[in-house]
Image (cartoon, rainbow, N blue to C red; front, side, top):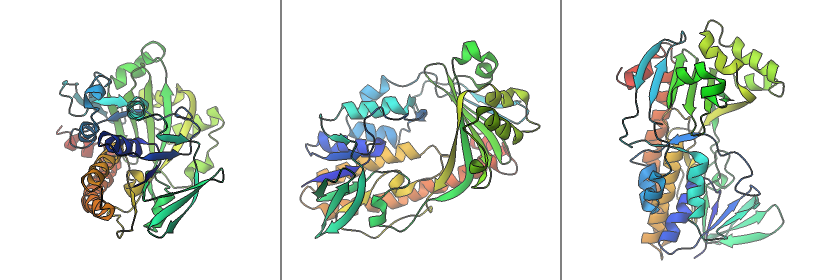
Length: 370
Protein backbone atom coordinates (compact mmCIF):
# COMPACT_ATOMS: atom_id res chain seq x y z
CA UNK A 1 0.00 0.00 0.00
CA UNK A 2 1.38 3.41 -0.98
CA UNK A 3 0.41 6.48 1.03
CA UNK A 4 1.10 9.99 -0.26
CA UNK A 5 0.59 13.08 1.89
CA UNK A 6 0.50 16.45 0.15
CA UNK A 7 1.78 19.15 2.50
CA UNK A 8 4.54 19.12 5.14
CA UNK A 9 2.73 21.21 7.72
CA UNK A 10 1.94 20.05 11.23
CA UNK A 11 -0.97 17.83 10.18
CA UNK A 12 0.83 16.07 7.36
CA UNK A 13 3.99 15.53 9.41
CA UNK A 14 2.06 14.21 12.41
CA UNK A 15 0.34 11.72 10.13
CA UNK A 16 3.67 10.61 8.65
CA UNK A 17 5.19 10.23 12.12
CA UNK A 18 2.31 8.18 13.55
CA UNK A 19 2.42 5.91 10.50
CA UNK A 20 6.19 5.51 10.99
CA UNK A 21 5.68 4.59 14.66
CA UNK A 22 3.44 1.76 13.41
CA UNK A 23 5.88 0.62 10.75
CA UNK A 24 4.00 2.10 7.80
CA UNK A 25 5.87 4.10 5.17
CA UNK A 26 4.51 7.28 3.60
CA UNK A 27 5.76 9.93 1.21
CA UNK A 28 5.21 13.62 1.95
CA UNK A 29 5.24 16.09 -0.94
CA UNK A 30 5.79 19.79 -0.27
CA UNK A 31 6.09 22.65 -2.71
CA UNK A 32 8.70 24.52 -0.62
CA UNK A 33 12.27 24.11 -1.81
CA UNK A 34 13.49 23.22 1.70
CA UNK A 35 12.31 23.19 5.33
CA UNK A 36 13.72 26.69 5.81
CA UNK A 37 12.25 28.29 2.69
CA UNK A 38 9.80 30.43 4.64
CA UNK A 39 8.94 31.50 8.16
CA UNK A 40 6.74 29.08 10.07
CA UNK A 41 4.90 31.74 12.10
CA UNK A 42 4.80 32.53 15.80
CA UNK A 43 3.79 30.82 19.02
CA UNK A 44 1.23 28.04 19.43
CA UNK A 45 -0.50 26.89 22.59
CA UNK A 46 -0.78 23.12 22.41
CA UNK A 47 -3.97 21.81 23.98
CA UNK A 48 -4.00 18.81 26.25
CA UNK A 49 -6.99 17.13 24.57
CA UNK A 50 -5.84 17.57 20.97
CA UNK A 51 -2.30 18.67 20.10
CA UNK A 52 -0.73 16.97 23.11
CA UNK A 53 -2.83 13.88 22.50
CA UNK A 54 -1.41 13.77 18.97
CA UNK A 55 2.13 14.10 20.30
CA UNK A 56 1.54 11.15 22.62
CA UNK A 57 0.38 9.09 19.61
CA UNK A 58 3.52 10.20 17.77
CA UNK A 59 5.72 9.15 20.73
CA UNK A 60 7.13 12.69 20.90
CA UNK A 61 5.44 14.19 23.95
CA UNK A 62 8.48 13.92 26.22
CA UNK A 63 10.68 15.72 23.68
CA UNK A 64 7.98 18.34 23.20
CA UNK A 65 7.86 19.11 26.93
CA UNK A 66 11.54 19.99 26.80
CA UNK A 67 10.94 22.58 24.08
CA UNK A 68 8.04 24.60 25.50
CA UNK A 69 8.33 28.31 26.27
CA UNK A 70 8.26 28.71 30.04
CA UNK A 71 5.93 31.49 31.17
CA UNK A 72 4.05 31.49 27.89
CA UNK A 73 0.68 30.74 29.47
CA UNK A 74 0.45 34.21 31.04
CA UNK A 75 -2.60 36.14 29.78
CA UNK A 76 -3.74 39.77 29.93
CA UNK A 77 -6.75 41.68 28.61
CA UNK A 78 -6.86 45.46 28.08
CA UNK A 79 -9.45 47.85 26.72
CA UNK A 80 -8.73 50.59 24.17
CA UNK A 81 -7.47 52.96 26.89
CA UNK A 82 -4.79 50.40 27.88
CA UNK A 83 -6.56 49.82 31.19
CA UNK A 84 -5.80 46.31 32.44
CA UNK A 85 -9.07 44.41 32.78
CA UNK A 86 -7.76 40.89 33.42
CA UNK A 87 -4.45 39.26 34.27
CA UNK A 88 -3.47 35.63 34.80
CA UNK A 89 0.04 34.42 35.52
CA UNK A 90 1.50 31.22 34.12
CA UNK A 91 0.65 28.66 36.81
CA UNK A 92 2.95 26.05 35.32
CA UNK A 93 0.09 23.56 34.86
CA UNK A 94 1.17 22.78 31.32
CA UNK A 95 -2.39 22.33 30.03
CA UNK A 96 -1.71 24.69 27.11
CA UNK A 97 2.06 25.08 26.91
CA UNK A 98 3.45 27.50 24.32
CA UNK A 99 5.95 26.50 21.65
CA UNK A 100 7.25 28.13 18.49
CA UNK A 101 5.58 26.68 15.40
CA UNK A 102 8.95 26.24 13.68
CA UNK A 103 10.41 24.37 16.66
CA UNK A 104 7.41 22.03 16.74
CA UNK A 105 7.64 21.43 13.01
CA UNK A 106 11.35 20.62 13.32
CA UNK A 107 10.57 18.12 16.08
CA UNK A 108 8.22 16.29 13.74
CA UNK A 109 10.52 16.55 10.72
CA UNK A 110 13.53 15.22 12.57
CA UNK A 111 11.54 12.23 13.79
CA UNK A 112 11.00 10.95 10.24
CA UNK A 113 13.36 8.78 8.18
CA UNK A 114 15.52 10.65 5.68
CA UNK A 115 13.75 11.06 2.36
CA UNK A 116 10.22 10.89 3.75
CA UNK A 117 9.61 14.50 2.67
CA UNK A 118 10.22 15.41 -0.96
CA UNK A 119 10.90 19.15 -1.05
CA UNK A 120 10.20 21.23 -4.15
CA UNK A 121 7.46 18.79 -5.15
CA UNK A 122 4.55 20.98 -6.23
CA UNK A 123 1.39 19.13 -7.26
CA UNK A 124 -0.09 20.77 -10.36
CA UNK A 125 -2.70 18.16 -11.30
CA UNK A 126 -4.39 15.14 -9.77
CA UNK A 127 -6.85 12.60 -11.14
CA UNK A 128 -8.58 9.43 -10.00
CA UNK A 129 -7.38 6.31 -11.81
CA UNK A 130 -9.25 3.11 -10.99
CA UNK A 131 -9.56 3.72 -7.26
CA UNK A 132 -6.03 5.14 -7.01
CA UNK A 133 -4.84 8.70 -7.69
CA UNK A 134 -2.22 10.00 -10.10
CA UNK A 135 -0.40 13.20 -9.18
CA UNK A 136 1.50 15.32 -11.68
CA UNK A 137 4.29 17.52 -10.31
CA UNK A 138 5.57 20.85 -11.58
CA UNK A 139 8.81 19.23 -12.79
CA UNK A 140 6.81 17.02 -15.15
CA UNK A 141 7.13 13.81 -13.15
CA UNK A 142 4.15 11.90 -11.83
CA UNK A 143 3.31 9.23 -9.27
CA UNK A 144 0.33 7.06 -8.45
CA UNK A 145 -0.78 6.28 -4.91
CA UNK A 146 -3.26 4.01 -3.15
CA UNK A 147 -4.04 6.53 -0.40
CA UNK A 148 -3.94 10.28 -1.02
CA UNK A 149 -4.13 12.71 1.90
CA UNK A 150 -4.59 16.44 1.37
CA UNK A 151 -2.66 18.29 4.06
CA UNK A 152 -2.10 21.23 1.76
CA UNK A 153 -3.76 24.04 3.67
CA UNK A 154 -6.61 26.47 3.23
CA UNK A 155 -6.42 26.58 -0.57
CA UNK A 156 -5.99 22.84 -0.92
CA UNK A 157 -5.77 21.38 -4.41
CA UNK A 158 -6.61 17.93 -3.05
CA UNK A 159 -9.87 19.23 -1.50
CA UNK A 160 -11.32 19.65 -5.00
CA UNK A 161 -11.45 15.85 -5.31
CA UNK A 162 -13.99 15.58 -2.50
CA UNK A 163 -15.63 19.00 -2.09
CA UNK A 164 -16.51 22.11 -4.06
CA UNK A 165 -16.36 24.32 -0.94
CA UNK A 166 -13.92 27.21 -0.82
CA UNK A 167 -12.90 29.34 2.16
CA UNK A 168 -14.76 32.65 2.51
CA UNK A 169 -13.50 35.89 4.06
CA UNK A 170 -14.37 35.90 7.76
CA UNK A 171 -14.65 39.69 7.97
CA UNK A 172 -11.42 40.22 9.93
CA UNK A 173 -7.97 41.07 8.58
CA UNK A 174 -4.70 40.90 10.49
CA UNK A 175 -1.64 43.06 10.07
CA UNK A 176 1.32 41.32 11.68
CA UNK A 177 4.09 43.41 13.27
CA UNK A 178 7.20 42.63 15.33
CA UNK A 179 9.02 44.50 18.06
CA UNK A 180 12.50 43.03 18.41
CA UNK A 181 14.53 42.92 21.62
CA UNK A 182 11.50 44.31 23.41
CA UNK A 183 12.93 44.58 26.93
CA UNK A 184 15.77 46.81 25.69
CA UNK A 185 14.42 48.48 22.54
CA UNK A 186 10.70 48.70 23.43
CA UNK A 187 10.54 48.60 27.24
CA UNK A 188 7.06 50.14 27.56
CA UNK A 189 5.58 47.64 25.10
CA UNK A 190 7.37 44.82 26.93
CA UNK A 191 5.93 45.95 30.26
CA UNK A 192 2.45 46.38 28.78
CA UNK A 193 2.25 43.03 27.02
CA UNK A 194 4.10 40.83 29.51
CA UNK A 195 5.46 37.37 28.90
CA UNK A 196 2.57 35.51 27.31
CA UNK A 197 -0.61 36.28 25.33
CA UNK A 198 -2.26 39.69 25.50
CA UNK A 199 -5.55 41.02 24.10
CA UNK A 200 -6.40 44.72 23.75
CA UNK A 201 -9.92 44.88 22.35
CA UNK A 202 -12.79 47.13 21.34
CA UNK A 203 -15.63 46.68 18.86
CA UNK A 204 -14.25 45.72 15.42
CA UNK A 205 -10.62 46.41 16.41
CA UNK A 206 -7.87 45.02 18.54
CA UNK A 207 -4.32 43.94 19.22
CA UNK A 208 -3.40 40.33 19.96
CA UNK A 209 0.19 39.64 20.95
CA UNK A 210 2.55 37.05 22.30
CA UNK A 211 6.09 37.07 23.62
CA UNK A 212 8.56 35.00 21.62
CA UNK A 213 11.33 32.99 23.33
CA UNK A 214 13.94 35.35 21.81
CA UNK A 215 12.41 38.30 23.71
CA UNK A 216 10.61 39.84 20.74
CA UNK A 217 6.91 40.68 20.65
CA UNK A 218 4.75 39.44 17.78
CA UNK A 219 1.55 41.46 17.40
CA UNK A 220 -1.53 40.77 15.30
CA UNK A 221 -3.35 44.03 14.61
CA UNK A 222 -6.95 42.98 13.95
CA UNK A 223 -9.46 44.98 11.92
CA UNK A 224 -13.02 44.30 10.87
CA UNK A 225 -12.72 45.77 7.39
CA UNK A 226 -13.88 44.96 3.88
CA UNK A 227 -12.09 42.26 1.95
CA UNK A 228 -10.60 44.91 -0.33
CA UNK A 229 -9.08 47.04 2.45
CA UNK A 230 -5.70 45.30 2.37
CA UNK A 231 -5.34 45.89 -1.35
CA UNK A 232 -6.10 49.59 -0.84
CA UNK A 233 -2.99 50.03 1.34
CA UNK A 234 0.57 50.11 -0.02
CA UNK A 235 2.20 47.74 2.44
CA UNK A 236 5.47 47.94 0.49
CA UNK A 237 5.86 51.50 1.81
CA UNK A 238 6.40 51.15 5.56
CA UNK A 239 5.51 54.73 6.47
CA UNK A 240 2.33 54.65 4.39
CA UNK A 241 1.32 51.30 5.84
CA UNK A 242 1.82 52.45 9.43
CA UNK A 243 -0.19 55.61 8.76
CA UNK A 244 -3.06 53.62 7.25
CA UNK A 245 -3.20 51.15 10.15
CA UNK A 246 -2.93 53.86 12.82
CA UNK A 247 -5.80 55.74 11.18
CA UNK A 248 -8.00 52.77 12.13
CA UNK A 249 -7.07 53.25 15.83
CA UNK A 250 -7.88 56.92 16.26
CA UNK A 251 -8.68 57.59 19.93
CA UNK A 252 -6.88 54.53 21.24
CA UNK A 253 -4.20 54.75 23.91
CA UNK A 254 -0.84 55.91 22.58
CA UNK A 255 0.73 52.95 24.42
CA UNK A 256 -1.21 50.63 22.15
CA UNK A 257 -0.76 52.70 19.00
CA UNK A 258 2.99 52.57 19.63
CA UNK A 259 2.88 48.84 18.88
CA UNK A 260 2.44 49.91 15.24
CA UNK A 261 4.41 53.14 15.13
CA UNK A 262 7.47 51.53 16.76
CA UNK A 263 7.25 48.23 14.87
CA UNK A 264 10.47 46.85 13.42
CA UNK A 265 10.47 45.66 9.83
CA UNK A 266 7.59 45.22 7.44
CA UNK A 267 3.90 45.20 8.29
CA UNK A 268 2.45 41.97 6.88
CA UNK A 269 -1.29 41.84 6.05
CA UNK A 270 -3.28 38.60 6.24
CA UNK A 271 -6.96 38.09 5.49
CA UNK A 272 -8.75 35.55 7.70
CA UNK A 273 -10.77 32.93 5.82
CA UNK A 274 -12.93 30.02 6.92
CA UNK A 275 -14.76 27.09 5.41
CA UNK A 276 -18.43 26.52 6.36
CA UNK A 277 -18.70 25.43 9.99
CA UNK A 278 -20.07 21.98 9.16
CA UNK A 279 -17.91 21.34 6.10
CA UNK A 280 -17.90 17.66 5.17
CA UNK A 281 -17.91 15.45 2.09
CA UNK A 282 -19.13 12.07 0.91
CA UNK A 283 -16.72 9.14 1.28
CA UNK A 284 -14.47 9.31 -1.77
CA UNK A 285 -12.39 6.19 -2.42
CA UNK A 286 -8.71 6.49 -1.59
CA UNK A 287 -8.60 10.15 -0.56
CA UNK A 288 -9.19 12.28 2.54
CA UNK A 289 -8.09 15.57 4.14
CA UNK A 290 -6.46 16.78 7.35
CA UNK A 291 -5.97 20.20 8.93
CA UNK A 292 -6.87 23.41 7.12
CA UNK A 293 -7.58 21.47 3.94
CA UNK A 294 -10.49 19.87 5.81
CA UNK A 295 -11.67 22.68 8.08
CA UNK A 296 -9.83 26.00 7.87
CA UNK A 297 -11.35 28.33 10.47
CA UNK A 298 -10.64 31.67 12.10
CA UNK A 299 -7.94 31.52 14.81
CA UNK A 300 -10.14 32.75 17.66
CA UNK A 301 -10.39 29.43 19.47
CA UNK A 302 -6.73 28.51 19.04
CA UNK A 303 -7.74 25.22 17.44
CA UNK A 304 -6.17 25.22 13.96
CA UNK A 305 -2.74 23.71 14.63
CA UNK A 306 -4.08 21.48 17.40
CA UNK A 307 -6.80 20.03 15.18
CA UNK A 308 -4.38 19.52 12.29
CA UNK A 309 -2.12 17.44 14.53
CA UNK A 310 -5.03 15.50 16.00
CA UNK A 311 -6.38 14.84 12.49
CA UNK A 312 -3.00 13.48 11.42
CA UNK A 313 -2.69 11.28 14.51
CA UNK A 314 -6.25 9.92 14.28
CA UNK A 315 -5.91 9.15 10.57
CA UNK A 316 -2.57 7.43 11.14
CA UNK A 317 -4.04 5.31 13.93
CA UNK A 318 -7.04 4.35 11.79
CA UNK A 319 -4.79 3.24 8.92
CA UNK A 320 -2.65 1.26 11.37
CA UNK A 321 -5.76 -0.48 12.76
CA UNK A 322 -6.96 -1.52 9.30
CA UNK A 323 -3.90 -2.03 7.11
CA UNK A 324 -5.83 -4.28 4.73
CA UNK A 325 -8.97 -2.16 4.51
CA UNK A 326 -8.22 1.44 3.55
CA UNK A 327 -11.84 2.41 3.02
CA UNK A 328 -12.83 1.24 6.48
CA UNK A 329 -9.95 3.24 7.96
CA UNK A 330 -10.88 6.41 6.07
CA UNK A 331 -14.58 6.05 6.92
CA UNK A 332 -13.79 5.62 10.63
CA UNK A 333 -11.51 8.66 10.56
CA UNK A 334 -14.03 10.91 8.81
CA UNK A 335 -16.87 9.81 11.11
CA UNK A 336 -14.92 11.35 13.99
CA UNK A 337 -13.42 14.22 12.00
CA UNK A 338 -16.64 15.90 10.87
CA UNK A 339 -18.34 16.46 14.26
CA UNK A 340 -15.01 17.31 15.92
CA UNK A 341 -14.10 19.96 13.38
CA UNK A 342 -17.65 21.38 13.28
CA UNK A 343 -17.57 21.89 17.04
CA UNK A 344 -14.24 23.70 16.85
CA UNK A 345 -15.24 25.78 13.84
CA UNK A 346 -18.36 26.95 15.67
CA UNK A 347 -16.24 27.85 18.69
CA UNK A 348 -13.86 29.79 16.45
CA UNK A 349 -16.73 31.76 14.92
CA UNK A 350 -18.06 32.55 18.41
CA UNK A 351 -14.55 33.54 19.49
CA UNK A 352 -14.33 36.08 16.69
CA UNK A 353 -17.51 37.75 17.92
CA UNK A 354 -16.36 37.58 21.55
CA UNK A 355 -13.22 39.46 20.60
CA UNK A 356 -14.71 42.09 18.31
CA UNK A 357 -18.42 42.33 19.17
CA UNK A 358 -20.25 45.51 20.10
CA UNK A 359 -19.41 45.14 23.79
CA UNK A 360 -15.74 44.13 23.41
CA UNK A 361 -13.77 43.34 25.51
CA UNK A 362 -16.67 42.16 27.68
CA UNK A 363 -17.07 38.86 25.83
CA UNK A 364 -13.52 37.69 26.31
CA UNK A 365 -13.51 38.88 29.92
CA UNK A 366 -16.55 36.70 30.60
CA UNK A 367 -14.83 33.81 28.81
CA UNK A 368 -11.88 34.14 31.16
CA UNK A 369 -14.25 34.38 34.11
CA UNK A 370 -13.26 37.98 34.90
